[in-house]
Length: 262
Length: 244
Image (spheres, rainbow over the protein chains, first blue to last red):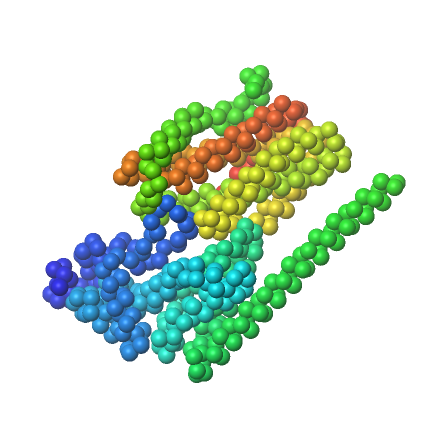
C-alpha cells in the first residue's frame, strides 16, 4: 500500500523537511509530532492520551524488530516503513529521526508495566521494596533483546537537544513504578523518592550494557545493592527527622515548664 | 448571615466579588448532578463508557488546580494549627472556634491529598516553604491578638474563596464542553465530583469568612495594612504554587 501524498518525496526530494511534514496526511502528521507530552493529570473516566497515531505505531513497532540486527540507526526505521507497507522515504516524517525510535521503545515498555500489576501484587506481597525491585527487573528484561545496541540509544539520548525529553521519560518511568506500588505521598519526598529511583534505574541500565554474565545475574545483583543503599539512606533520613521533631517538642515543653514555674 | 451593615468598602466589594459566582454556578452544578443521578437509575449495571482523552490544556488546568488547592489547604491547615497552638495557651475561650475551622481545613487538606495521589499530580515543589510560612503566619497573627487572627482568616479566605470561584468558572466551562461532545449528553463523574468538591470547599471557606467578620476581624489594628499584606501574600503564593 502506497500513500498517495507520500509520493511527493519521490518527485520533490529536495524540499525542506518542514514543508514535507506539512503536506503529510492528517493521520501521519500530528501537530506536535511524536512529542511525548507531559502526562500530568491522570484521568479514570477518560481514555489515556496517545501521542502516536496508528500508522506511526505500526511503523515504529516494526522498526523496533529490526533494532537487534541494525541497531538504533536510520536503517531500522527504513525497514520498519517497508514492513508497515509505506515507502522507504516515509521515515522522514519522524522529525527527531532515530531518537523517535528510542522514545517509542521507552514509551511502550513503560506502559507495559501497568499490565503486570495484579501478578506482581500477588507474587511479591506487600513489601514496597520487593515490588519496586520486581518492576525494575521487569523493565530491564525488556532491554535484554536490544542490550547490545543500547549504548547507541544512550548516546542518542545524551545529545544536548534530546536530554530534556530523555530525562522526562526517565522521570515518567520512576513515577509509574511509584504509582504502581500504590505509594501515596503529598510532601517533598514525592520528589526525592522519584529522583532516587530514577538514579538507581539509570545506573543499573548503564551497568547492564557492560554485563557479560549469564542471564545478566550481575546486573540484578547490582540493582539489589543500589536499592539497599537508597533504602538505608531513606530510613536514616526519616530517623533523623523523627529525632529532630522529638527534640524540638521536648525543648518546647521544657521551656514551658520553666516559665510556668516562674 | 448579616453583612449589610459593613462599613468598610473594600471588604464589601471583595465579599461581593466572592459571592458573585455562587448562584449561577451552583445551579449549573446541581443540574449536572441531577441529570447524572437520573441516568444512573436507568443505566443498570452497565459499565460506564470512557470519555475521549482530555485535551492537553484541560489536563494542564486540572493538574494546576489540584496542585494549587492542595498547597492552599495545606497552608490553611497550618495557619489554624499555628493559631490554635497559641490560643490554647493564651486565650482558651477562642480555641474551640479555631478548632472548628481547623477541623474543616484538615478535612479539605486530606481530600486534596487524595486527589493529588489519585490523579498523579505532583505536589508543589515549595511545600516545605508553604508549611513554614503558614505556621509562622498563624502563630504571628495569633500572638497579635484575637482580632488580628480573625483579620488573617478574613484576608486568607477572601483570596481563597475568590480563587475557588475562578476555578469553578473554568471547570464548568470544561463540563459544558464535555456535555456538548459526549454521546450520552452528560459529563464525566470524575470532573463533576471535582467541581462539587471545589464548590463545597468554597462554601466552607466563605463560612469561615463570615465567622471572622462576626468575631471582630474589622477591629484589628492596623486592619488595612494587615489584611492587604496577607491578601497580596496569598495571591503571590497562589501564583507560585500553580507553577512550581
